[in-house]
Image 1 (cartoon, helix red, strand yellow):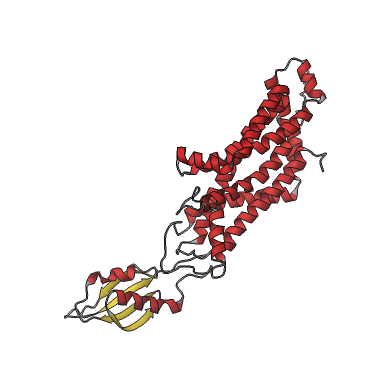
Image 2: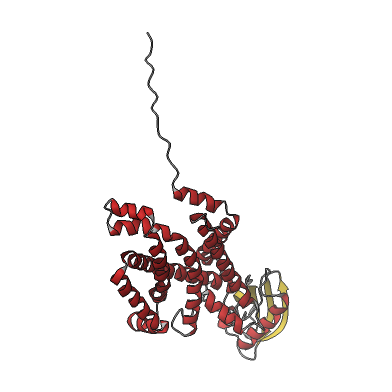
Length: 375
């Protein structure tokens, strides 16, 4: 008995799309890939860094104002005794003897009047000590032994002029700056691309009327929109990207309109028109996808521009308010304290500069990937 041979079915191979080719060209660009890794690292640090930090972004350490960045813990050995004597003075006791016992301090104290057991709160209020307790109280309660643990803290980026941890505030600022930059850019790109593509494709009087609207909006000052939005929405986080996105789409609309005027004369657009494809389908399937090159490049430039605009608004008191912060606000504060506390400017600048460089390299890589002839 012989088995009938089953006929081999010819399964057609899946073809490669233009997006597959663009992805491969992008991954072959080492600078763009490295920039994507840097940008992703900064984003991850900004999101999860404050959760892992031992300090809250708004916690004030009064004893650590403008301390330099260091890998070793504070307080230094020479800071412990002066801080303990200052706390004892506030507690109205006199230190007769002082000694270190590992990570703790033990001191004999006396007072002209009875020592209140609650005096330990003066030591615990200090950022240098914790778990203070009074032992070996004398019968007349005018002498005792005070024991307290040294509270070691790490400030890897130093502290600011108010004694807040710069590392945590830099991470929190990254959340705010990146979120505002991305959301405002998405708003501006979405409005600008649709408006510009529609205007350029329809042409004629419709194009003229739509562009005159853009010219009118160009003549209105940006701060006017911000003040108007503040009146309606108040000073909140959403205001920032609504205000910026509502203005920055004007440039995008002009760029896309210019590209559309060229694209709509191409053979494939004319073929789609001859086949009966509607205006909406042509704009969505042919016009907008072929304008992505300039759009992507402009987007990588718009994100840092939005971050700088947010800093300007915060400086005017219309943006991010304390204790929340952003990279622009931190850099502004660091510039005012450059002579005595350079670390306040260095670390936020490193994060912001790295983000800007990464976005520029990613933009170049995307431009080459989406339009390989423009290389």
